[in-house]
Image (cartoon, rainbow, N blue to C red; front, side, top):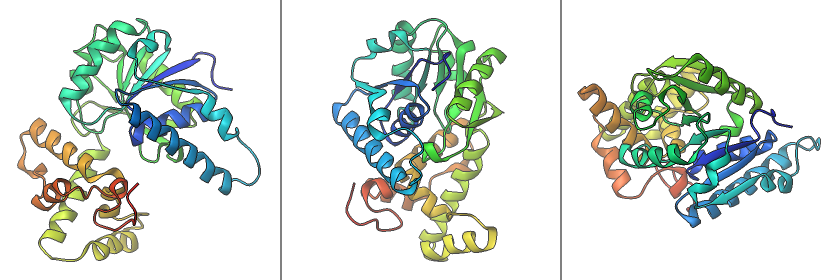
Length: 290
């Protein structure tokens, strides 16, 4: 069972990341309240968690682990933020756009218990800036989860200007319950992983746009020469090209540095709805859209 310290964890935002975080927590024996403003997002999240658990069941024939029904029973979905009034810890996963994040924090700050830690699941947005929206900046921490959440053993943990050691310890303990290790980094936009990864993916898009090589060859070079499991364009398709674009725009604005300028082809693909795996097509074709 989960650590008694974390009886109920709030998860805000039921997209790909929010669903993954909710599943991982529930599989670790923690009760979850999953909140999203859209009922259809909650329904989609529940369906994707069910599908993910079914796939895990097929691969894990030993019969270990909780049954899908038990895991799903630990996740309560709702569109009502007031249901977060009793959570011990909260992980926020709304889209990487400041106006959207900025709306969430004053709302949850007024509802959640004062000792509740707010973990910002972001790849680029300043944790210090998020903390400034609350009356608890010392309890605001960044947790940059990787996709797919249940399968990734490490989380980038970001210390904002006011984040205390106690908050970092609490966060590490929750991650340990989830079977993960946290690596603590400082709060500068993009942190470690995305400051490098977004530039890499963007530069790979430029290669395709400049017709230096097709996507397949760009990715094959990275996989064969550097031992990467996935090439940069496959990684972009997995993360979602709209998320890549949002992250690059945040980095460009934060550093006022043109090296983060999104490739026009990336913008064009997002405008065309070619977002990668989640839309059925990006740099690669994934068949029917999901």
